Image 1: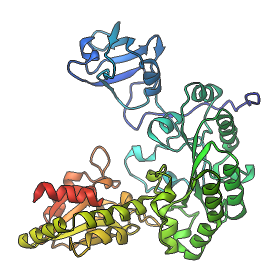
Image 2: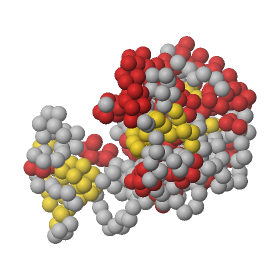
Image 3: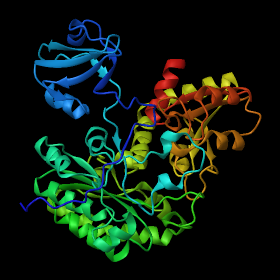
Image 4: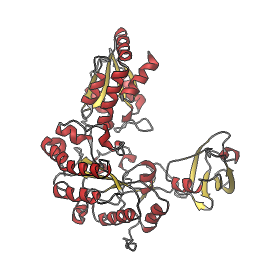
Length: 465
């Protein structure tokens, strides 16, 4: 192992999830305590702050999981009612939970991005959206805890040592390219630090799920070959997701991507194929995973399920189409009569089933919804709010739904995908779920917010009919 590299002295940027935060607040805010739990028995209550665990300052959930892993732990707890900090000893039985819930995963402010990536989607957002949408997180702790992709460019040596000593593996890393000049051009002046940190983690056998945002004319072609070869020579990289450039109308740098050129999408598929085949021959896994968009853009069928290695990058848009297709086949085969009964119930009620979808997945969703057994249809919503090549369901906005659906929905049972709402029930363009539902009901429709996966839809109708 080489000596630790010298790193720049820039300060680590931090954010607070977009909420108002007391600059003097310390530790982890307790938001819930389970009755009759060890935390409850020790007198811990909602609104208190846990400052330390076994004498270690509590900065994030990693500290909590690491320090509170045994049957006994000692907490320093601040009661805001009197400002006093007291010691609480918690003890639990084998397998018992501590019964305490904190406010989020990091307690000292989220590490934000220090890069200037040319393809950053956050920099292409419309103006005047809610503030939390503009936060560019790049926190290695959320990479481990929540699967977020990070560049590693804002790590100091203490951070790297913590990842190694605590075995925070796997880490989800935005790689993009391996040539220094290409990385510098794509990501900005801190790109070299990200590569140094990544090499160090690989040297210490930390598992890596990597990602490339493929930008036409920048990191495709020969540079993509170099990046694929680099990963192929490092067994610690157990998956590499390749996703195409996405862009909105609120920028001037990009006017086209692979979605605008089927031939270029097919070329990428062919370029990656030998690396996939070699990986399967070498270790029995595909490793090099292309986003669903490449296959949709190229008008090529997505690969079979066993090509996705258990879907390690599912929430990066890799394997979702295959998963939906396979689930459709299973549900149609096993529940055909049940779906037909649902169809008849809808007919008796004088309702047609209509499921909303972004353009990217509309045909796939239609394979289930518009099947003869269910007899519904898909309403494809074009994303005019973001524009560009944005066409995924998860980025669908309420204004487009209201603009593009007919005013008369009196004979419609409308399924609105739950993925378009955040945890607070807000769409990306600032509509609350209740307001959208009310507006759609005013047009005469019955409105249901749920997952549009085949089994989830079937389960919903089972509770109704």
